[in-house]
Image 1 (spheres, rainbow, N blue to C red):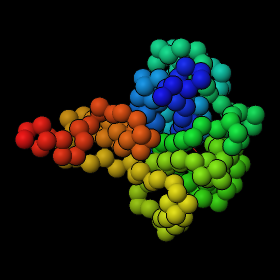
Image 2: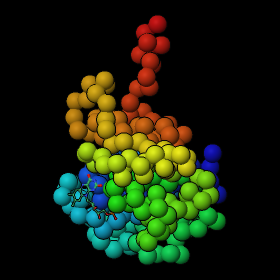
Image 3: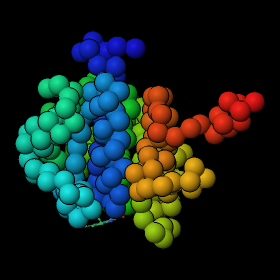
Image 4: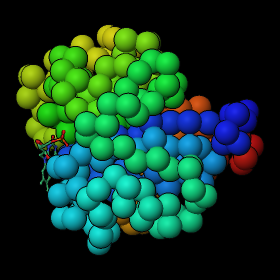
Length: 212
Ligand SMILES: Cc1cc2nc3c(=O)[nH]c(=O)nc-3n(C[C@H](O)[C@H](O)[C@H](O)COP(=O)(O)O)c2cc1C
């Protein structure tokens, strides 16, 4: 399926300040490689986590970040659009402009709480609120350990509203050889939920079918 802008589709991606920003960055790379237009938001806390957990020197302003990541991933201008925390005129802030799917990866417990309560105090929270009110796809990838009753209540509430919770907890049955393999395990789950092809991980049972 081709969108009118020449992209295969359009996805909103928010990276928030939970540990595991590698999941969000790898997802971004995979979405762009599949010719998806990505409307990206990176929270202030996520920028701190990115600086802590990766070697990426991500500029702070949305315009500079967009330019940097467009070069980093070698995509055409316009495929990746970065929006700031109070950029209320962004497409994601309204049901008439927002894509049909949004992923928050990783999702901090702070943003989880704000989404569950409909706070809409920044563009990430507003975009998620739009996804909920419009009954669109909202995928959340929380990471915390242990989870408190509050966190679990928020996840249950959002699941009941139709959101999908994909915990940032990789499996090990594919015998990961690297951190990248473990990251790909979670990213493969997200891509599958979005209905996109993924070659990061064999589907369950595939080896049996090929072997038989
Ligand atoms: C290095 C680092 C790691 C963090 N890890 C987590 C985490 O795993 N889960 C979480 O919910 N918050 C974590 N936090 C705290 C959040 O970043 C903090 O609550 C922040 O207010 C979240 O803001 P945001 O939702 O706007 O991104 C971490 C913070 C830092 C600096």
